[in-house]
Length: 267
Image 1 (spheres, rainbow, N blue to C red):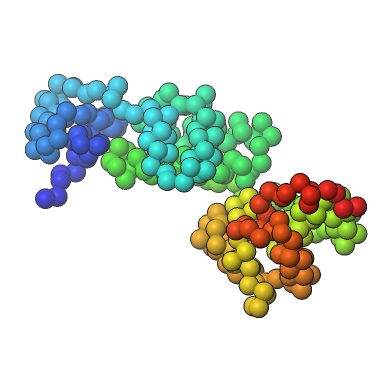
Image 2 (tube, one colour):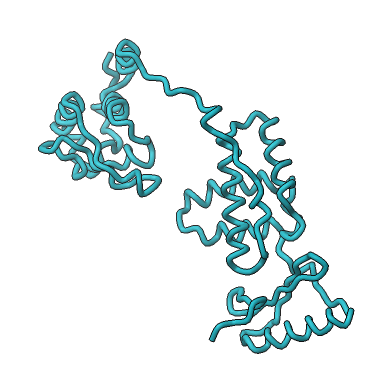
């Protein structure tokens, strides 16, 4: 049975929401039965219509509580950790404010504050993206009628992005000369494939390396678009084959910790 607008569920308890003088209010029915929430909503609307205001703004979530709820339903622990960093940044600005008391100007002030702190436009955009997702989460659960970030614009990252710098062959050789045998292999693979370090390269398994097709399969990445097959140059293939012949590399992953006899520097 479809519930009436203004009724939603938190856990096993039904809540009601209504608007009075342009402000949205929330109230628990303290019941797991939807009909109790419907009766409470009808009662409140009757009281408001008669001029008897019976609202409980204190039950409205704070911004910090909303972010807690949103982050808790994120499955990836690394993503949770990243989002909590953004959450902490917002606490001094409006963390204790009710979600009904913040607006687009609140987040415009946050953007200005962060830029003055020397944070890059891309960094500010990452934080705003977390807040936007959290408030959309509130709208989906009928905690708000609309998101206060609907009118907040992101910075144009292209205007501030630095052009990528490509290493020269001489610079590459100087870097490799400073590496021991294992670090040299890691740096070589990174230079010639462009993989991310932690979430991609360090998770590559020997079963992901196809010498016949000359490709490396990226089976784990930050996004679905990152799952790909990377072409392997003859130089990279040669370096990997030499590493494969060493007894310390007959393991599941390419870059597991080395045994002591193969950690000496090669100058």
